[in-house]
Image 1 (tube, rainbow, N blue to C red):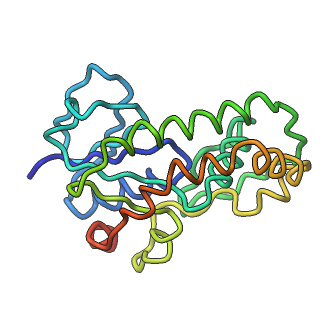
Image 2 (spheres, rainbow, N blue to C red):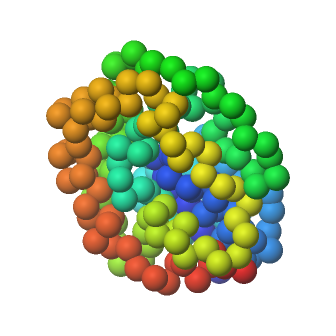
Length: 197
């Protein structure tokens, strides 16, 4: 069996997906690839890097993304404030004081990076690749998940939530949707068999 590599820009449920697949293949803990020079030898690998097809040619690629790209950007806005990135089922909810996110450059940079990530990988997408969409992943989970949604009510945390959403919609949403459409069209049901075990 070739290694599975879960590729994600981030804030897409890719850690949850990685853990569920690792559970299916009875391997742990999670292996997170942070360096381009590392070998891809672990059974299930997770990475946010931009990896060439040459680098991943011996892996089964699974792309993890959200249906709604704005949710990805808003989630980054929250965690970049210092909030925890993930929440285990048995962890208490950490109270986050609502705040104004006034770093428009950070929002813009996140949008541009998300578009670049999609554009980089969509040009290499083949019939051998799988795509898992977060919203569908959560719906199809039948066994208890190790993680639960961390910030489902971002509009209550980001005091200028509407302003941020309006800025993204006006300046980046159309391009973000275009850049991910090929992935959404590519998603199938075969990969979801690994998540309920």
